Length: 445
Ligand SMILES: [Zn+2]
Image (cartoon, rainbow, N blue to C red; front, side, top):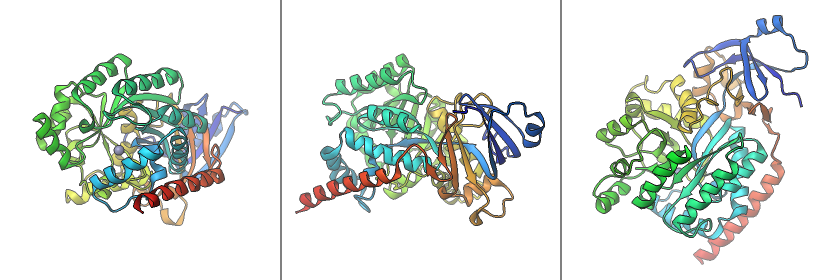
């Protein structure tokens, strides 16, 4: 296989430096890395090696692959199964019983593959996952070629994955040990949420994360009820509790933070945590709008996530970035809030930073790994292109994602998946639909 490639692009948007747009440039990939970025004219003049695959992407803009900083990838099999319900009812009466009945290796494998297919086709090259059977998620990620950060999940109650807290820790660390040397896989502790884990386990995670040098990924203050419950049980908000337990640091990615006071924003800003903003999931579950502009102004690293397909219902990072921008503008009554270049940075480089992968991915820079997306700019719905960066954010959509590379390997070519059999994927999802529908029918009768 030819490991050297030259991508001749109409535009390259490296994300760092922020807002930069390079016109008619060539990006050279060698040994999975970005070897050089230079004007195409210069490349043609200097061209030495003939042993190089060349791609004409003159109508495309190259951007770094999106980093989906929060998802539950196997849950795509539950997409659309429980809709328009209050958060608690949705979670406790629908999602959890279905998970009790169905979650196993096969469910995780098939659901993750479906999500990976959707993520690749919409330009996501790396995802941060929180779910049971993370070893299966790692395996299918490697097979399909996508990059993944696997959650070492910890939750106080038993599941098909682990029957006790100790077993969650044990199995999580085994995933870390088994995959630690794989270039596409990293691991993070994934304590589900403050309300589903006791102090002792949280303190244990804080210590182990330092020892293993891994990130922590956790839902925090998604709903008002969660805060009231914490005040009653622990005498403080979840954020204050995490502070006491030593969890507030740049290792932590707090997901949602929909309900945070000004004082709490100051506290988390000082601690340097990362925020995974999931605007569509928050809206759909009626959880509100996270005060992202205020957090961004305090210097917090804001990344973006889709959450699972059961609460979104799509895993579309470009849609998420656009939603983040529009929500910040609307809710702050400020058209200048979260401009396009900020939202593109949130969807790429900030996500990489939250995952501890900033030196490797998240921007198109020489020496970084070649995780790249080519967006078609020549379509009717994108014309005319005055500025490709604002165009991608405000008139772009996932169907314009034409080509995707992870670690220099092409996984999507002209909107077709190269490592996943789409027909088989349809068959598998139909099979799960039947099983889950039959179960729901027997439950209601
Ligand atoms: Zn979630």
